[in-house]
Structures are given as structure tokens and as C-alpha cells.
Length: 90
Length: 132
Image (cartoon, rainbow over all chains, first blue to last red; front, side, top):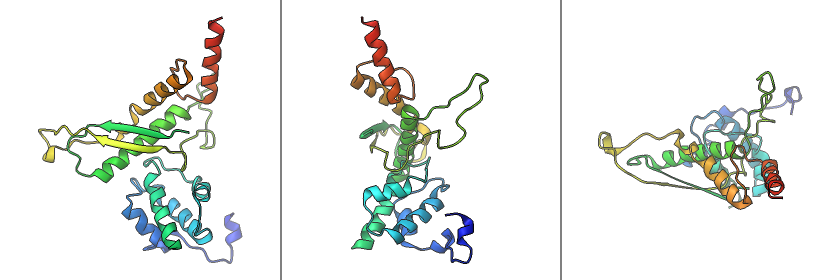
């Protein structure tokens, strides 16, 4: 989405996700080291949760492939997003 | 598609297991990227040609293997709790291990990184040509 398409609409930034389940999951699963990619991942994960709360692995990977992390192996991030997706379905 | 990657390191007494495993897996991830897909391409004027992450391919989510990390904990006599430091170590040997594994699988000696599929094919063709 281009920024100009957001004119007149409500936007949510990562500060608005303070205390959100996905943020808590990232902390619990140790899903960050330097934190540079973390805000991007949390935003993207929240978008995934909003639109595909029952996302399969393939859908999750397709969504999150846009975000690169150089510090981690994505394993903790995958565990964090999966824990939130499965609890949304529970 | 790499299925599993294992690393055993000696970092003295590991006092933050989650953190230590996390940094080693991160290092392995970078090492596997270097071994399998990341390559700097220079032209004749030594100018770097990959100028974006579209052409400099790093591992993305879903492309990582199952990581196995373990420790040989030789305590450091001079440090509290016998701990040592650990950080980048995960990257050091993993791409060599990958190239060795691929050499074995392809039955041809691979001696450069990144080992892209075209390189394996090329080496096998050279091997075939030289044995005739």
C-alpha cells in the first residue's frame, strides 16, 4: 500500500501494539537480539493475525518473507507468531 | 532445501542458554546463507554490482533448516561461573560443513562458495569432460 492511499484512514503504528499478544510472544520466545527487524516483524505479524487468524504455515511464510532478520534464525520469531495464531484459534 | 544443521561449540559454562542458542542459530543462518546463496558480484572495475537485497539473497523465513545446537562446556578457570563469551562463532564453520555435505552428495569436489545449483552442475560437467 502506498502512503498516499492511507489519507483519511486510521493507521496503527507499532507503538499502538504495546502490550499486544504478539509483542508479549516475542518477549517470551526470545524472538529478537538487536531489535532492528522487530518492529517490522511485529507489525507484519499483527497484520497477518488480523487478516488470517487461521494462517497455515505457507500463508505465514508468504506474509513474513518480506522481513529479513540477520541476527536470529527466524526460529524464535516463527514460534512467537505460531503461538499467537494457535491461541487465536483455541 | 537444507533440512537440518547442527553445531556444537565450547563456550565454557553457558549461563544464558536461550540467548546463547539464539546467537549461535543466527550465526548458522548467516553462514548457511553465505554458503548457499549470498555472493558479492564485482565487475571489472571492482564495483559492487548487487545494490539491493533483491539481488543479494539472504535466508528468509521458511527457508531455515531445523537447527541443533549443543555445548561442550569446558569451564574457563579465570571467569565467573566458568563462562566464556560467544557471539559470531556460529558462522565460522557451518558453510564449510554445507559445502562438504554437498560435495559428498554431488560426488564432485566443490571448493568455493556460494554453492549455487549451477555451480554443482558446472563442476559435474567438468568432471565428466575430464574423465573422457
